[in-house]
Image (cartoon, rainbow, N blue to C red):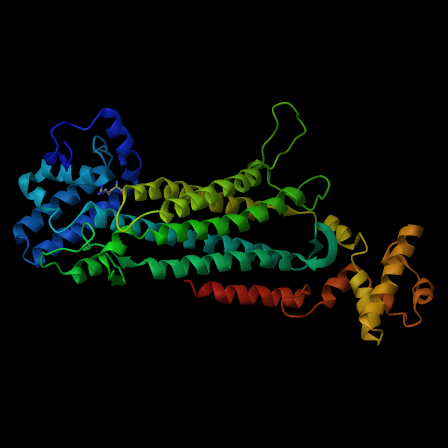
Length: 458
Ligand code: ARG
């Protein structure tokens, strides 16, 4: 029996019912729905809209439903949505008093409240997972601060960098993600309950009571907006999308760096996969899958933005589409963060290979140009002289660190003996001591700064 059957002569057609239903997915809201209903029932009692006994009976019934679902003895099925299910079950348990639960409430403010409660929990979980992930990035940075690796632009060797500087780059990205989720949590923690269908209610409700019980920071100030506002869903999907973008970049690096061609890192066997036909293969399926799931999270963001754009004020059933998008993106985000936390913790480093690779490709050419510029040669001229030296190396099969002083001096008389130390891979990385730079000291300062900022979210 539908909650709304009274007005109709005929029952809903089976296909219409199947098309309309949301229980198959909104059952995920069961805990939030019961929590919000308990708060509402308590408020109804305190405001004298129902008697204290009725309020207590409803709360007791709701709690028994929660306990039974928790213990797996009550299956959530057989109704149009989670709200109908909980109410129907309450009436089955406590009789007609249960029918008073929906006084001064609509499924419109109810579902908006449930989604906020659920999404708030999801934001908290995402923040916890991000903190843990940044913790692993920091640990890896600390371990590798003594190592040098190639830094790239355009996927061509650019300059030698400190390994910790590399990991710190990702910590910065995920710290921004953490901050975005944190800001979202503050913005979304506003309670729609009490807005009823779309216009508020004539019952003498006290929204402060439910706000306090449900730990919201404020109550919404406009009923039509409150029942139809899903900005927080779109924002969650955006925060998740950007986090996935950052993860996906790290995946791309992982796939490249663990290839034979690069050979900088090794993925632990436990997080690698093989091929059914090629026995030698060790495939990076996990980073590939994380990279792939990024597309699906972006898809959900586009879906919700499109759903929201044509909705006339106030609630419309289109909004039911928010749930599968949210749940699926949440699942993808959380599983990706979790698996990559484990995988990243197990990555091993081919230290010598990284160091040698960092020196290949004339990666210290900028240091040669800087050497000249620091001795008075205008940088543009220094760049040209160094460019010629690189060409000389290419033609004669040499590298910058293996050039003799005479060869340097043939290009410019400004070069002195100390150029031979300046062009080494380590000196190159160590030379850049600016804030955020590639020296060990700068990378250590980077670690300290990330740790300090991370603590703000404790
Ligand atoms: N399943 C619905 C949703 O998710 C619940 C609200 C239904 N409200 C209504 N007026 N039909 O949006």
